[in-house]
Length: 291
Length: 323
Image (cartoon, rainbow over all chains, first blue to last red; front, side):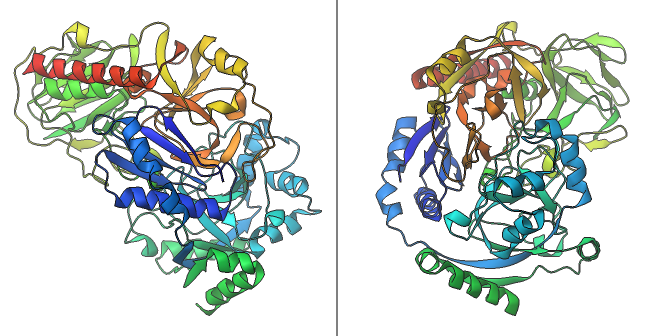
């Protein structure tokens, strides 16, 4: 890995652990950002861990940019030596693939897409070598995903699939970002899936929609009463394909306060996962099925 | 004490100095885009500089006052009337219950700041009254104000009329507007030719310009250094493995139109960024109208810090001139 340190203007330092995605880079970024947080450095105002990078915002009137840079760099070796293990949870997220709302939106922004003739799923299936959209959808939901970043807007999770690199799905982002994306769209860009927590701009390909809200500023939704944002880095997700009837049923249950997401407590150990991905995932999904 | 909104303007929101601390969840700091003008408005009416006020873009609202209070409007130049009588911007004046403040057409700049003594007193969300409409957070019910809204105002005392910010301390973008940039982040992705062209080209503000980000157009499409795309980034040369964005950072999706992220920035994404507008020039972006000519100027860190100190000194001077 080739860690790169750079300034983002006079108030930010950006640390790219690696220019390509890996869970190793994720864990180093997380450890390094935790170390900077625990060091309570005066002048630090925000710490943002990302997929394979992280960022520190600081007040240059309190700490000079080069002094801030030196403090972060000092943690690098220690962060690399940290244990790559997390106590976390696996959550089942229902997805209505090929829904009418994302379809209407992708047609509206077709001129900003690489392939104006088909849908985002047609395009993604084709460039990833799948014969049918159904096969591609199967690949998208059959193995679990790891939340490697929360951000963009209002608690949006970026998810990385827990499979070998040669099985990873990859798509480009839109040529020019859309100005609209339906709330709770399940999107895809690079090797990442995401859930758009709120309606708004976006550059990811659109595959479907979940009826399960993941951001509630009013904190009225039963499982968002403690905090308005659902996801945190390290969460594990299993997509569950649903049809329109199931989508409508869950939407109603969320509204009347009776919907409870299916969640199980699990541990994620990167070495154990790397040793036997299929076996490790089977155990994760078993824990979920028992929940 | 209240403000009754008769006409809301175009996209008028309650703002203060923002809610730092939640960007790691994708909830931006927010707050007034032109912080200098915003602070000055509060100083004029005797408030704490972070008291909540109104930010109106391109078009002013029409407001009926529910009590006697001091009022000041700063930022863009826009003719202003109290019960039809002209009033000066950047100057304090006193209003009586039932009087109505209205505005004419925007002359220069883009955003006005309306401060009232006591400050707007809506319930804070995550420590701030700033409106973040995308997240339905803060402000008045998490949205831009609408006709018929009755906005609560805190207790304050009326100050002298005619307190004024001297003209030399009203900071405005020049023409072309010059925005100073520190290169960095993914600057190395551009070819030398495109690196040079970014600073040489004449840009203009595109219509897609708001609190989240300002888009610019008119310069040449950018060329990227050839490389195999890193795993996870996506195949377009402007794609990166999704990373953090910063306030002021300049992304160029597809190498076409630079977007400078502003106070309601998204916290991360998958487009490369070539550097960032320095903190001292963020206020100026808040006063740019669409089609305004813009030049980006390359500076180094010491110049960025000197500009930051100059801006801070200017705010101190306003403070002293009104004390």
